[in-house]
Image (cartoon, rainbow, N blue to C red):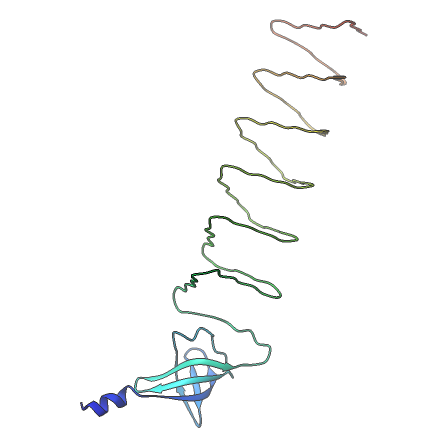
Length: 212
């Protein structure tokens, strides 16, 4: 093969066409002919039927280089075969005037030295949540928890309250090695039936003791 023919094999011509079909194969109309085309790897915008596109014609076929124009109001979709990585040596920002949605059928992973979330309202629907950390701090004006069951397993729990109200419809039971209840003013225990029992010693001490 001569050097001239090698140069011709590497030549490419640019031509503007229109997408006629996307699946099962990409078909583009160039002038009066319709040919098959492949989307160039650098063309991340997925073409739709009717889009105006720029194509490169060469000895190996036709590559769609760019989507020039599409239907008014149609969404622009960025797609890539295989994995897609976006990297920036500086700060990477993703913004949307009407919203941002992240969807995947696999695993969504967030990894950062620090994570900040700021929103007027937040709603999370997760059937199962696992949280592993050293410190959990919640600063809120009001916290409401509605659950069918709530289990706490802790080594130490300290509560500092101004007021505490508990309403239990059924059984309220405490089992402990030692129970110490102290009140600066009044300690009152009332019930339809009240039982105080001790296996070794039961002691009632006070300046005045009224029974009955």
